[in-house]
Image (tube, rainbow, N blue to C red):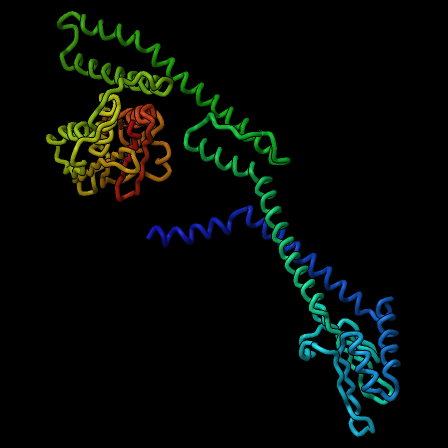
Length: 458
Ligand code: ADP
């Protein structure tokens, strides 16, 4: 299926390739120039009064004179032998003279007129050729025709063949050289495409070389400037969130202490519990922000040990027993060992499963979640798939951004337990990337969502 779908996609990409289009333009231009030149040359040759045509007419008259009037087949035979020709007299019917044909030894067979290209024609003389074979026809005084077929020698023919192949070879070499130089000239476009893809995937450090490209150099420079200012703006934004989170830690600690030390009876138990809950949420939020930032700046903060990912995954599913969700598990038979930070990976798996529980309910209220773990191309692949309403395509690229919540219509403190700060996936991504892995999301509205975590085995 993929194979079948892959082919048209390949041809579609090929047909859109700038390189191919340029190559086509170059080839078409070369062919048109050559054809036009050839046609013009042929036209020039067929013009009656050129030096070569005047000489041709004179030459053919000399030949006719040598044969004599009336034409003498014996003289023609000697001439044909000397000049490697076939000479034919087509005498007019009813005239006194018979038609005849004489030929040099070892000539190829007759050449039908239809293969010949006429390049000169006047009242008395007509000349036509194909490759190195030429036919000149002269109208003689009594209304008959003398035809001279000029045959090339075998050496001449071999030389012609050699030149034909040489010209094909030179054309091919020129085409290859043109293709290589076009590739070389278009390399900045390739660099820009790759760099734009990397920036789209979050690598804001990516730049393109500005060393070459002619007019494309300006485009490369502008691209680099654009990414640099994007990087500055985003890091200023991150800095602000980080600074605010840092600054909030001290007043939050003070608040917690004051709450604990509040004299008995100064607030109702319910109000106190609500304040504690709010504080817990704020602490969790600040913790997530600082944790994600720390992991992004220094993956060394991971406490790496040999972890059995299969055991870790089945451990996390225990929290499901208390829910009404149906969980389909696909774990490997044996252990799947990996050097990782067990606590942090548990946070990832827990967040993904919690999200599936929170957001993955089908329209009828049921919740069916599939969790899979396996080995693919030397990497551990962990998948959590639900059959909920899915994520809108416009929201999908943002789900890993801090504070992003696709379902903004819902209050964070909604009674259905769908509360969240929009920090869970951001933290998951930071943890997975600190392990050298990747996290991706696929979602179709109305069908469900799948998160795929890929971790290199190390
Ligand atoms: P939150 O704390 O809001 O759960 P997350 O970072 O974990 O924050 O998720 C960000 C947003 O992505 C959520 O608010 C939700 O809108 C969306 N989301 C996450 N997981 C799913 C899922 N399995 N199905 C649908 N939407 C999801």
